[in-house]
Picture 1: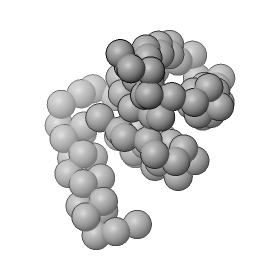
Picture 2: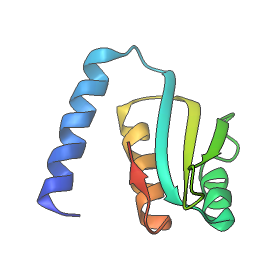
Picture 3: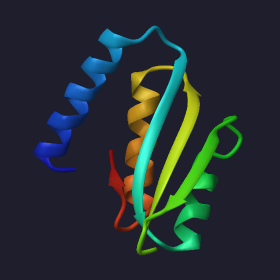
Length: 95
């Protein structure tokens, strides 16, 4: 991991700790290339967590927006899922 992403995750952890009472519902948003296998991979990553996952194709159909609403136990768990998605899905953009 780069120094830039380390700094980003450190700041995110601090913000999450300061703005929510844990455990809490957290909304992940991802943009991925339009590929059914990549959407399935997100479903797999959040499997057995009670996540509500919504997918919407872009107007040209080249990308998909994926929203994942799931109860997370703490900021570290939130960051771990961001890292897992980033490692497993090529071309993903986390919002």
